[in-house]
Image (cartoon, rainbow, N blue to C red; front, top):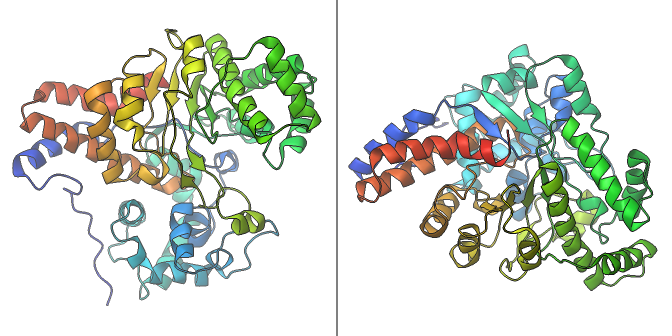
Length: 470
């Protein structure tokens, strides 16, 4: 017999009565605030075409690597879960794939995925019974009915979720046709892009050569000369800004930066272009390009995000069969103090440049990131990311960062997700964790309640709006 789906109103709040009561009050101040989602990976075509979503499997399971990586870890094949491969779409029956997910809900106990999905199923879909083997068919059919209605089209959900802004992420070789279509439609929803130049910066990217050709075509510049290559970036950044971009994003393996002379940069670039480079050259080029991107951001005002420390596509078999970004990232230790120094020597004291640092290396919070952001004017700390956007991860972030960097060298929360319907759930978790953390400081007499009330409003809305220039 299926169990009831219960979303306790005090979830994520302390068991201590005084702290819990205050957390409720702080959460009530901001629970209905508009959602700012300034960094993520949802598909802009959803909002351009405003077509109905497909099945539950297509919407929830196939695109969400948080879900299918857990199932894969237990021996399930990605194709059987509805995940498409390099050979084409999955051959799995969507209902059968959904039943696999439903029968394995126990795998997600204690994970943020369980909390996000229950929020979606309960608050957004209206279910009052848990998903399990006995309710799998009922869920699949009811979700299909809902997704076929106008109320569950992408734009209607965007408005229902009270999203003020949603940023997607595209490469310089993307035409941004969907963003153009959104603009031309007259719809008032604000969906913008972000500039992610990794495929034309990372010489070790498997598509680097092909992407350079497209980069040349779209920019109209000679991208095989150092001067033309930089000009192409500036031109594409300008176009992205026309489509609403306020930020760039850089997913390099490390945080390494460099500040080479013009002649050194050109010589390095020439080795990259002719294909006569070493892995050290590729890393140095990525390092130099972070500094070049910072220089361009100083000129055009785009906020810069750096997401280092992820060994991406670690599972070679999955990469070769299914392609990139299939839940195979593994965190790496990251050196921020030494690796960022060349960039900080060049631009660290600027007042008009914002560089947001993310990490998958939690050991760097109090040792490196908080002291750096607590000193350099250009640096801000992004929220807990990927493996750490959990209640525990968010709490560890606040505990280790606040003592040195404070709250105001952070940038609130961004959900960084491909799973559109989980966006309100993810923001709700972040708001609850911040309310609980601030309430603890108040009951420990480390913060006045009126200051906590002001701070939670800033963490929820004002800090991301300022950092991303929204």
